[in-house]
Length: 68
Image (cartoon, rainbow, N blue to C red):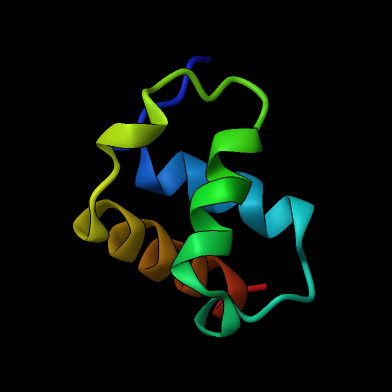
């Protein structure tokens, strides 16, 4: 599955699997951006991310983190 910035839920699941002990609220957006673009299957243009995309990913990841 190819991922884009709009796939916040799937990206969050993958980040939760890759960084299970990381509190998403402790991650700087610069690092979050890099981690997302390094995910297998991520195919979107890194330059088209917005603060809104990163916030949506972070909040979805937070939900995953709290539900583990």
